[in-house]
Length: 196
Image 1 (tube, helix red, strand yellow):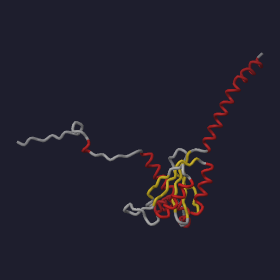
Image 2: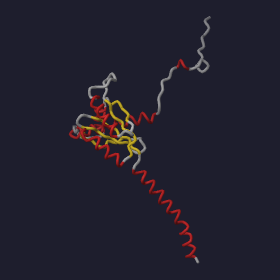
Image 3: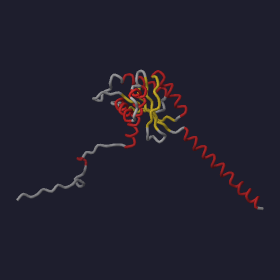
Image 4: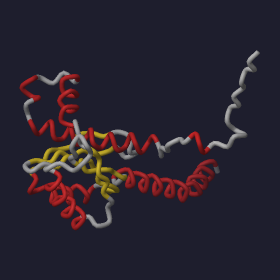
């Protein structure tokens, strides 16, 4: 009698266990292809590539790829990960005007748009990223010999570009405050002392 009761309980739980296993496998599949943002530091010879974590909070240096092979590399990466945005470092002068290197980036941007028409591209100011990358390597304790490796600088620069974008996005929209738009009833009243 007790054995048949146990069997009855076990059989009634079987569909529930199957559903639970199905939900767990669906969840694990989504973990495998979570949204990623790709950061790119484009150069004539090499391209630094960085990637966001699935939540879009942290950037990590990923790889340095030869410029001629970057589109192929990104396509292969996108086969395994869901790329939702590219953040490309854009070279500008101190006055904000595009620098000479921007011409190369413009050509790359056209190639990127052709290869990934459904993925939006955001341009991010890349001024000082190489300097910041060198500083990060020093602060991280990297040996002087290893810091001379330009490939390391490129991928760390890409991570800095991507992190800059994500930090701005996390901060939310900003706005300029114009005090003249505040109605008089809300502004603080200035009291004038009477002269005697």
